[in-house]
Length: 363
Image (tube, rainbow, N blue to C red; front, side, top):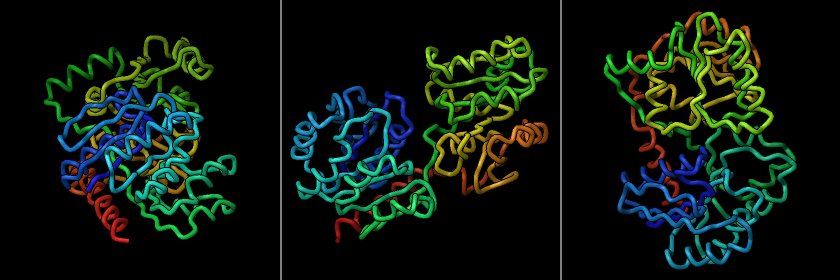
């Protein structure tokens, strides 16, 4: 079986869906001996870790002028299935991703789409373009259909869908005690607790709330994420970090390789992810922190309180006092081993995709 994954972003490009695509490709190739192709942007050269993965970083810009390049790859590589990921950072405003299902369908290829985010009424035209083609839909968010705007439910007409949960795109790292002490001392400086945020630094991530949740008397904040220092939101973060109470107690690392992020998570007293729209099992950052044993404070629209199994506290969105209280109670707690968590989640994800692909080809 030959599966062509389409993603606008792919490592070393920085995009959560790009990281997801790489992990999925590697798991499919390793566990099921599928031949996997990656159609992506010219910067998405990736690291080919399997003989059965071929990367095609040929798209300069995801506009219709690049359609011929995509057609040539599909014709030359001849996949059984074209599996397109939506959205990705590098698609930008280009129309090519939204007409690719039609192109693949007209080339007599089976089409699968993964929708990582929900759609609003403002995106109705793009949703129409990708929904009129017969295809199987994959969601990484539970209850996707129920949470979609009622006026957009026509997008599911005569379509089968599957919920396949997300997983960590960050590896699990096991450091010995001397290395943990040295790494924590490097970040902690003279403070007592190490508070970590990692990922993209956007307003929707609520990063500025860390300065209200954490305590400058005892805490060192580490923000392991890329900050656009010219943007307005980054100015807000820098303003908080340079306030007298936090001066010298905030470290902004910028983008870190995944192994370094994983190591940081193993020594954090708390990972705080105060998402302004609520987090959940679709967030790879939550998965990554849990996998590495950290205590996590995040927000949710559906869950509340402390989940001992995962070592995660779910607070109401923007509830500063609730998150502050959770930090005082659970900071420093490490998650115990659990067979349901400490396993190869990507193998299970690959198994579910393989079953889906076989069903699609048999129809």
